[in-house]
Length: 187
Image 1 (cartoon, one colour):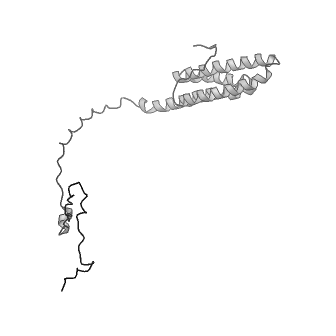
Image 2 (tube, rainbow, N blue to C red):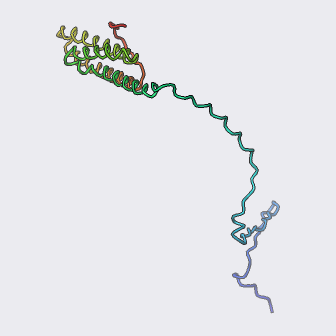
């Protein structure tokens, strides 16, 4: 009697593909099975990795200097106050626009009274005063010519934007210079 071929379920598949005519047969290596760890200690075992030596420690900090007086503790408040006075002097243009000279008078008083103590306030108040004088003169000249009367409103809008830019720079503690003005008031 002839042996019957085993059923398809019990036959193992042939791992080698059929040969291609004219080429050598391809050998496929058998699959590698990984072993599972036998205990949790093997899972937690540290792995040794070669590393570079640790960096050297940072250099020691310089010794602290003792405070000489209480003046450095009060100096930041003067600077902060000076910044806000400078911002306020630039924003006084908005009082000068409708009244022509009121903002300039207040800026002049801030320059004379508060500028003695702080060079930043002195510089920025003087710069704002020069700008306000220039805007007032140009406003009066344009208003005197009836053709230039509509340009006064445009001048005030441009001057307001430039004054806001100057106030922002002053709030950061930066000295701002208005572009293209006559500096009538000097030291």
